Image 1 (cartoon, rainbow, N blue to C red):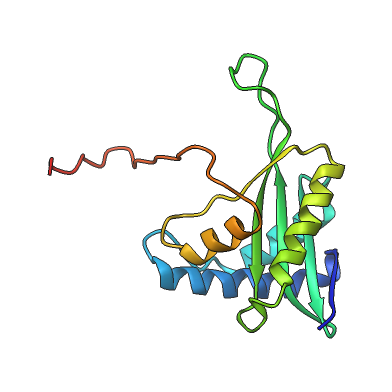
Image 2: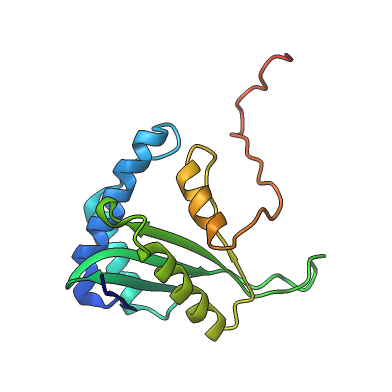
Length: 166
């Protein structure tokens, strides 16, 4: 199976929408409290905007036999401000989607390798893959691609009372 990785262009918008919505449906099955299926028109507008603007988001797609079967988004983050205590490093978030029938065949790995190269060319020195705990498959995938724990992200909804002590 030959996998072609290339930059997405405006002609790929419908494929990107399909990938995003398919991925959302799968995530809703994991945890409907965390995930949702966004409005398809909003997703279309997002990709049209991203592909026509100054690139703060890089999108690469994977094709197999002429069919778009996956994508990776690399979202460039703002550089740390001078007053912060962490060392300034150019960072980006990475989000990978591969259609179900093509998982486990090297598509995701090829996308991540290409994303790493594209990010490095833009001066990125660290990639983050934010994954909510219920998505164990994503944790396994990114771990196998060399991503490791980098701290802990805690969250709380304002106004929601604390649970009673155990």
